Structure formats: structure tokens, C-alpha cells
Length: 221
Image 1 (cartoon, rainbow, N blue to C red):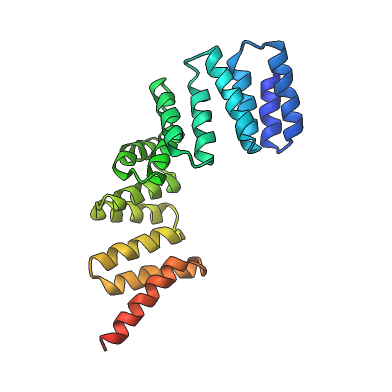
Image 2: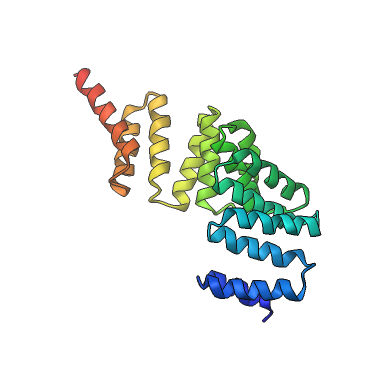
């Protein structure tokens, strides 16, 4: 097992100081290898030491301006700090350099969603779903992007697929309730809100939606 392998394993086990030791040794032995800086950057990102993580990822890109995973790491640093513009820029660089992985598309889509660029988010989340078709989280976020762009029929189908993957997905039920309400199907909306609350009793949005329906039904009696 190499220093890199040992460092990654230690990081996964939560032994962060020991992981840092291994990554440091790897850098000292081969200071021109960008992979070592990327791994140390990943560790620092995990530790929420964002400024130091940026320095290590940036060093990796200086050693290899085609180090796609370094740009992906930089994207994650900026995403964690809610700088979604810089996050998008770095995720796009990673994609342009050939890092064709579901996580890159997903995170780029999420950065667009959080920056309220819903239409731009759609193709990235769709591609992430194509690469990870059984990932309920990816599918759900794709559904949200569809709903935000008022493609409610398509969004409804996606949220139903989410429930096929994860039966007790409270947010999928909540969003199906909202779509049902939009389509004037009050009973179906109430059923979805009830299911969301059953799964997650503190689901405030579902509780609020249910209360509004009950008030409306009471006024119409």
C-alpha cells in the first residue's frame, strides 16, 4: 500500500492527523506530483480548512493545468462557502478537462439550483441522473429543477420515480402534494402531505400545506 492509499484509507476512517502525515510524506518525496496536493486538498476540505484547501488545489493546477480533479476540488470548496459562481466555474473546468462523472454534473447542477439558475441546472442534473439512475438524491434534485422551470408533468413523473427508489422520501411526497394542489386535486395533495408528515413529523412545509387545505375545506363547507 502506497502513502496515498494509506492516507486515503486513514481519511476514510476519520484518522485525519495520521492521514495528513502520510500525504505530507508523499509531497516531500515527490513534490512535483499534483495528485499528492489534490489528496491533501481533499483532506483539508473535509476538515473545513477552506483557505488551505484552495492553496493545495491551486498548487496542483499549477503543476498540471489539466488536473480536472483539482478543479473539481476547488468547486467543492467554493460550493461549501456558498460562492456558487466560482463553484460553477471550477466544475465547468473539470468537465471541460474530461472529468465525466455523475458527481461533477450533480454538483454543477446543484450550484446552479442554489444560484436560482434553474434552466441551466437542468441538463447537468439530467446527465447526473443518466450516469447514476438509481440515486434517489440525484433524481429528486432533477425533479426539483423541472418543477422550478414549471415542467410539472415531467416533475411529477420524476418524484414518483424517487418514491419507487426510496418509499419513505418525505420531500418527494411534499412536492407531489404541491403539484397536486396546483392541478386542483385537493384530496391527492392532502394524501401526499399526510404521508410526508407520517414519514417526517417535523416536516413544516407539509404541515403548513395540510393546514391551508383544511382551512380551505372548512370555509367551503
